[in-house]
Image 1: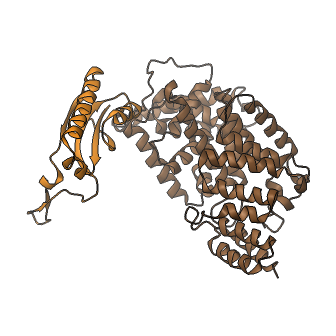
Image 2: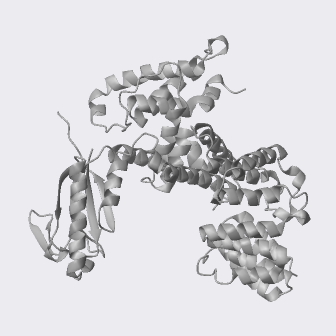
Image 3: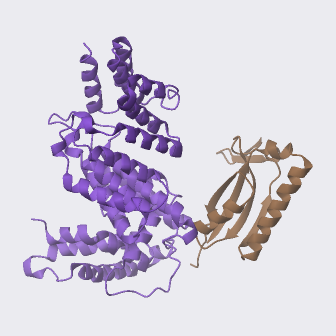
Length: 403
Length: 116
């Protein structure tokens, strides 16, 4: 059974940290005080000693711990730059954390003045409450490396005056886009690990979905938030079918669709319907519609490739991304035949140099046209560039199946 | 907080600029100075002579000094001038940096020492 302190950690960490950081105007003080409070909870909560309101208990204990620490290190602390909160005279709340606090924390952690890798680490550490060693494991680096990355980012926040507040209305759309990008990067890192052995890192994708849920709760009515949540839920619902029992990649067309998580697909489709009620288009909205087209096809043969190709064409127009062009070519090949797909792949070599997906796509299309020599050469190029063992094995198997 | 806005650019664009371009740039700096003054944010600033006029002085490690002709870092963009501004936070400093005429602006917080 989960210790009640561990449960309280999962449920309340981000909110309590955000509140304490605002009160003491220091992420360090908030983090240390909250760690003290949780340590006391782990030691002291058993059976009837578990408080009725764990969050309020933790907040009170953390405040005492912060006061003690500040008194003890008075000189050292005075030299530390304080977080710029913008409203210093805000009254303390004793009724419990308010949602706005956590939203400030999200915007501070995802500030564009921080390096993208630091934004992801800070967000996972403070908003979702993952421990440093867990984040280090997710990104395949040592705990000391991740701790150093977090420390450097926290120093920059304080020293450069990165504000601890929700941005002004004029800046909000651009800043929300940065936040959503961080969430999506966390998710895609989980969905397709860029290196190492495991193809998916389920926990990371789970965290991204949870984080998007927090942002949706704090920023209701934002179309892109709903669209991104829909996109992630629809993709993640396929996780158990994407890899076979030997850890090998299973293509969408060959996946066991009964292994897809139907409840998550239903949730994703409901969020997508909500996002589609607004006007206009966005990247996440188009990608979610593509994911929905796959999720709602009863069998691979039922896939509406014409619709998917059309969505990719709009997405390509919007993003100009060569990876989108590649996906569009694959959809067009399903819809109008391999030759039409190959024609769309022409001219991507410079933009996708070093990317195994381009030769892999070419290899498949040549194979379908019966052009085995061209297919083999393309598979060789793809195998040389593939970043994970799973992908290399799969490509090698495909090459061998050409006979 | 106090920030330095360090303006970088390719000096050749400036030395080879015609009179109209130079006048437009000076006018843009004038307007930027007015904006800072209006918001009570101006704490100083100067245009630097071209990096050809720079001399770099280094200690030689044995108590002496070595002088070299030219700027410390030989890069395609050179430090051409700076402003010192007062801003509530990094977001406001970045807002000033965006309003500054110039292609590249480095925003650096100034270290402020308080009391003993």
